[in-house]
Structures are given as structure tokens and as C-alpha cells.
Length: 180
Length: 180
DNA sequence: GCTAGATAGTCTCACGTGCAACTATCTTGG
DNA sequence: CCAAGATAGTTGCACGTGAGACTATCTAGC
Image (cartoon, rainbow over all chains, first blue to last red):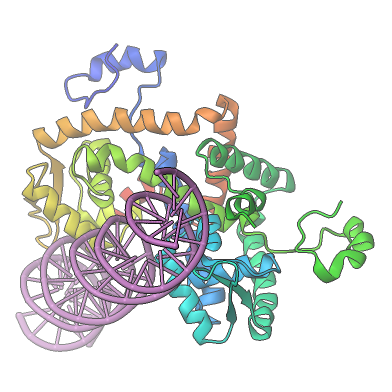
């Protein structure tokens, strides 16, 4: 039947059709891609308070810090770029800034002098240790509207979508790519 | 057992601590805000193919089109800005472009000459009618990894978070604000 | 062992977007 | 009915970021 319609002339038909099938209309508010965008933007800005205002970090810098802080060993900019899905030029700039602030340091890789191994300095680690609990707390606040079970559900659902989009990039896979 | 760990000096402590509490570490891959960001970006670029490459629309323009297409009556730029949560200057530029392309038209509002009522032209509506099924199909593809029930779950969970972030802006509320 | 192609990281350029100032218009209080 | 403040929409500016060129280095094949 008449599926997509900009009504006007179709009010009558709708009366009987409506009960049959929920005629597809594009309601932005129900459109998952739109909702994801909006939600991500909102959550980001809620978190930005922590690292941005309070510590002068922007999102890319925070991603570098978080990646290095999580894996205690040094890794390349390429690696960070891959596993955070952030453009390498963006990571490059963040690395430059963090080096300048003395939060990370880089050591030449004897085996391959094109790349540098990045790692947190003492100062960087201190910042990381201070920052991540705050961020976890924020995440917790944001998800406080969900029960424990619902959070698990959400995580699982996001995981499924990520996986189907081939977005998943476990630390292990990234390691594999990096070919230690 | 020991869940996420960047090991090194902590192997021993973890052994007994792990069973007690899942010591918080910040794994970006489990950090919901990060995941939302990444997912939203990926989904957006997947959808962009439809309206961008195929029809030369960018995201803001598409949002204007979608808002006007969904509600068949004319509405103001302000209204679109509010309900899509897009900055008014961004909407303004999108509107300019769409006017130029003859996809929308604007009529002066006699009651308040500061604002303009925007509506789709025939051409604009045709594009909308062509585009939104494609986008729904895309959304469907992206969510194809979820069962019908899981989709409902996802929608409900997103809804809860949106609500708790006061992100919800139903058409009705927006209407109210707009004060017809 | 040299050349061709891949890869790590940097840098320039163009562009989209948020902010804030600005104009025009409306509203409210004296 | 005028002045002060609010609101709709536009525009200039600054900034962050992705694309892609570029340099240096590594690797593979002849």
C-alpha cells in the first residue's frame, strides 16, 4: 500500500492503513544514527569539563593519555591512532602538545627509526591516575539512570553493533597489527 | 578473574584483590562515552554516502530537510535548531544552501517579521521522499545485527539516557516552545 | 645491493562549525 | 509611547580536524 506519503491527499486512506502497518516516516527523534550523534555529542561535552576545563586537555590528547595509561608499555603513535580510531595527524598534534607539556616522552625505536615509542612521564602518569577515576565517576553519573542489568545490556548491544561494523579493535588485535 | 590489566608491578596484588573488587582501570574500549563517539562517527559516515555523495547534502542540510519533511507544516529555523540540537548558525547556513538549491522556500511571518517559516518545495519534497527510505534502509542494515527485541532494548536504553541528560525534546515540547 | 613500493610521522591546506557580535524586530514596564 | 531587554536570523572570526602531500626509513624483489 501507500507507504511513503506526504499525506495531504491521503488522510482518508491513512485511516484504514494506519492500523495495518505503522507507515514508515522519518522521525529524526527515532532515527538511531541521529540519536547516537546527539547523545555522543552531549556526553562528550559533559565529560570535557573534566579533562578540558580542569586540566587543559582536549579529546585527542586525552585519548593518547588514556591509551598510554591503560597499557603501561610504550607504544607508537600509529598504534594509538588505530585503536582509538583517530586520524594520525590528529594524534600527531596531540602527541606534540603532550610532549611539550612533559606529560609523555618518546624514545627512538632502534629496530625501526621511523617510529617512536611513546610513554607517560611521571607527571603524565600522575595526571592519568588523577583523571581517570573522575571520568569513570562521570560515566557512572551519566549511566546512573540505568540499572546494572541495563548497563550490561547497553554494553552488549553497543558491542554487537561495533562488531558488525567491524569497529571492534581489541587491544590484542591492535597488538597483532602492530607486529611486536 | 583478573579482568583488564596492564600488569607489570601488580600481578601479585591483583591475585587477591581481583576477586574482591574489579579494580577500576580505564579501558577506552569499555568506556561508554568513547564508544558512543566512535560508533556515532562510524554510523554517520556510513550514512553520509546516501545524502552526501549521492545528493550533495551535508549533515546539517539533511537535518533541515528531514525536519521539514517529517512535519508537513512550515516551521522556523529556530525550531529546527532546537529540535535537532544543532547550532543556529549551522542551521542558518544550511538553510541558505537549501534555498539556493530550490529545495526549500521561506515565507515571511506576518505576525513576527524577525522569523521566516520554512517549508519544502516540490523539488525538496521529492528529494526527501526519495532519500528517507534509503536512510531507513541504511539504519536497518546497521541494526541488522540486532534482533527486533534487541532493537527495542537499544531504543529504550538510549531513551533513558537521553531523558536523564534532558536531551529529550519531543515534537510536542518543541511546539510548545515555539508558541504557535 | 639497488630500486620500487610500503610505512611512520609531520605539515600544509581547506573546510565545517561554534562563538560572539551585529541588525532587525518584538515585548514589556514605566 | 518610549526605552530597555529579549529574540530570530546572519555573518566574521578562530579553531580543530581530515585529506593528502611530503620526508625519512624500512622491506621485498630482482
